[in-house]
Length: 207
Image (tube, rainbow, N blue to C red; front, top):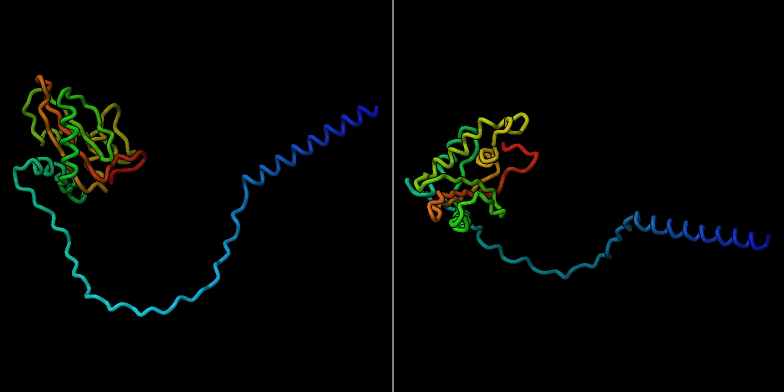
């Protein structure tokens, strides 16, 4: 009987230790942040104020105007036509984005694959057979997707595509850079446009 009592006491003691340990871990996990104790005030030595300099004159940055017929205008104009219809600010041509687009187009020169660069910018891609696809035609092929876009549900109708269109009319996008390349061995023309800031965030409307 003494042995049974001792065994029972050991079991109870072990369970008690486990409960205490569990409570300690539980309390530690949900611990409160200690109150912030303000540092004692130490007065700083007096220092004379500097003599104010003349107020600088603000001059807004000058946006270079792209000449008519340039590759930039051939891409920009159809983008900005559709944006103006929706009351959105026009996109500006960006050399950094154009350089990025040129880099990616050259990566696709050998296969003309419609593969995204997965970089930090929004991106629309176009491919056409032959060698004479104009920038405006590529942009229009994206713009016509607007007929498949339902603003109220923020989705594409049926099996139609509309992601290229929503990127073009994304309200927060400000800058554009594009490039076109004729692929090797008659594989066609690859065109890419990059957008910054990017659009097409899941669950968000473009405008």
